[in-house]
Length: 77
Image (cartoon, rainbow, N blue to C red):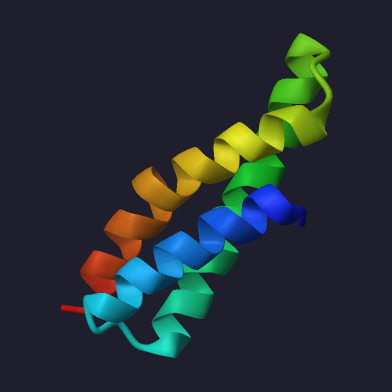
């Protein structure tokens, strides 16, 4: 995890805290986003040859918005 990941995570956690999501759900959503970004980067890197670290950053940003966000909204209901 690098500084870019940490900044993205902090912004998302601040947003989720304002929305009233529990710390437990936030941790689980962050873990889901990490797992998604890492596994997709590994797979895409093997196909494209692009270094997985380069792919992970973009995929993590995507995962926070399109994987973790819908998940936490659903789980918080």
